Length: 104
Image 1: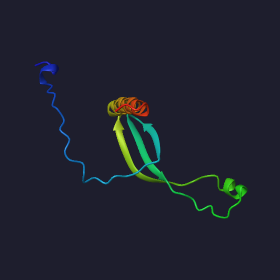
Image 2 (image 1 turned 90 degrees about the vertical axis):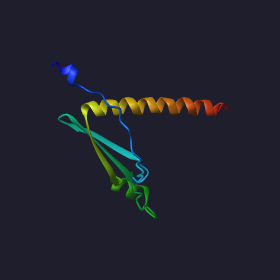
Image 3 (image 1 turned 180 degrees about the vertical axis):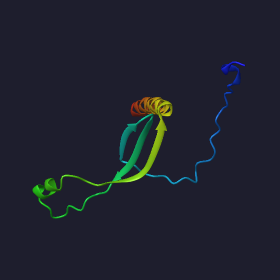
């Protein structure tokens, strides 16, 4: 029996995700090793810079990012992820442009 004859394609059915926590991320760090991509999402922790001079702020030189989620994707899934995000972004931008012109 040929390889093709054994393959079966199934449709994915996403279950309800409303019980998952919603996390806010203002930063993302992407890296890769081997055949996997790592996406670490984080939130910038606001530093307490009250009563500091500009020189003191510059001396500190960095702001902490608190990681909130980490995803690991295979090469194939990363490629799909990038394509889907790009398509969604294009749709969003087109809709935003239409709304900016007073259209619905």
